[in-house]
Image 1 (spheres, rainbow, N blue to C red):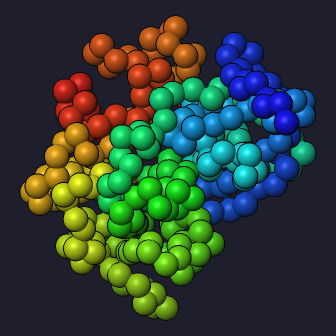
Image 2 (cartoon, rainbow, N blue to C red; image 1 turned 120 degrees about the vertical axis):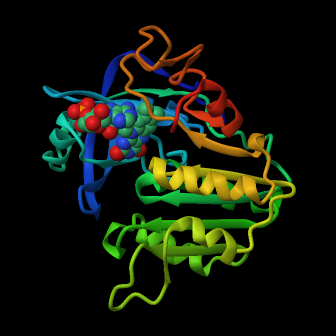
Length: 280
Ligand SMILES: Cc1cc2nc3c(=O)[nH]c(=O)nc-3n(C[C@H](O)[C@H](O)[C@H](O)COP(=O)(O)OP(=O)(O)OC[C@H]3O[C@@H](n4cnc5c(N)ncnc54)[C@H](O)[C@@H]3O)c2cc1C
């Protein structure tokens, strides 16, 4: 069968339909999308870690992480309502339309980490970009060593992708630790900040890559703990979020020093992030 050409939608948004909307957590929803043009559906190939620019007509455009490849999964985005555009998105209903440009950005460095243990450390909505990487690594299980997820949220209501988490907890060879900040009735999982899970999970640091995403206070605590245990700055990977306009290196809105987050990133090693002199 002839392979479909890979399509990148650069300048003008292509229209997608909102097929379904699921509540994930307070202020966080997942939107399942399909292109009105079926040729785009087939050619729109994604690398885990990339993003799209999503237009909410009449409100504006914003950057959002991509799910695992829609070749095996429906195209969807998970979005927290924080400001003008994302609140406008949350007011939409199935059948409404959005615009999509992309995919943009570098994606996660899977070739470089082949043969290593992989640790995911996510806080709150930091699980959104990491989830597609987790799914990729589980699909290629034989190429990696230990696979560990440490995920923390403020309360049990704030945990995202609960269906996935239940499945991951049952997946052999995938060590999944989930914590909430304070004890709650009915919660029998871990309690405490996510960096405390690093000790509980006895995470390896030799021949190991760590993917870390979450709010700055969590990120800094986790990085400090991993470095204290001897992990190299080159083996810690994260994604930077900066306000973006074009998504493909023209407008410079997301420039930090000599790097453009939209084309050089959004995925960087901790050593690179440190060199940029910017926090997460
Ligand atoms: C590569 C990339 C991937 C992203 N993936 C996701 C995702 O999967 N899900 C998701 O919910 N969000 C994601 N974001 C963040 C999302 O783009 C912003 O939340 C969105 O632009 C906010 O738009 P708004 O008009 O609703 O808010 P605004 O009214 O523009 O801003 C509301 C508040 O959010 C801050 N803010 C706005 N944009 C950003 C930004 N890009 N980074 C950090 N703070 C910002 C503002 O300073 C302000 O405090 C991603 C951002 C980037 C760059």
